[in-house]
Image (cartoon, rainbow, N blue to C red; front, top):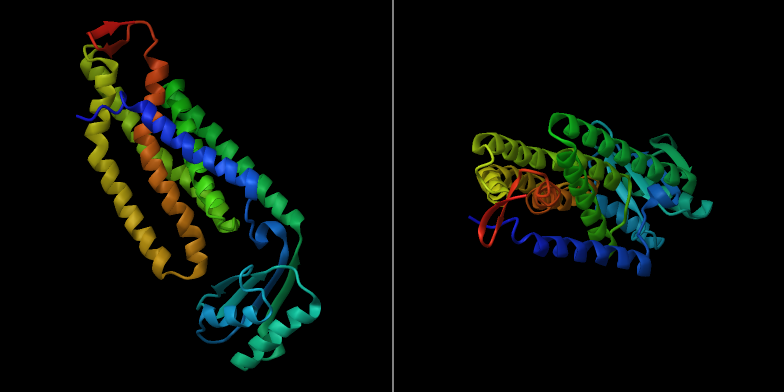
Length: 301
């Protein structure tokens, strides 16, 4: 049986290295924000037939805007295009519209909307996302504290924050643009990541009742993690395979949502095993009457 608790410092350090690297990258290079946060222009055009996003990017590239733009298929049948791009002069915007109309033989009525999005909207989105994460984390802490105990809740919430920071670090290190899809994925990670942690904590609680304090705390946690390992791996792999396929074959709008999910779900499985449970151990081992394993065997603290 693998000694998850005995090797805890290794996993703590690995996580700290990744998170620290992300924070350093942010301090040095800053973050790459998408149109949703920085502001810009949003065009929505009814193409009226199936089209390739690459053709739209080619038109944007003519105006040196392809790199900073986001193209998404929309509408019930996917025959509308939404283009989010950096703020631009009115003649450039009209040039893009004219080129799209010419390529697909469209009329003025097919241009559904032209909007300018200010950075204030992006700030509101960011602030609301932070508030949502804080409220969700607090609600989970309260629920787990009532359902289990407050130390379980605190360990679970720290593991959740760990998953968000790991995902953030990946985006900071690889300069991936942060947009509204990233925010939605981060909130999804919050709900998904807690699942594996709760399963392990529930097994720890069951084994504590069954062992009646005859088993050392380290052994009890290692046993509980081992017993739930197959379930955790199968669940995560099934989800990751599905999302990875969507990332490679799906449209750009799906890719922006799938990428942070892949990172966050993988990190969630890691933190449930190597972060949450060891953190709970560190707080629990000092309780009166709890046995913890030492080199000389079992001792009662």
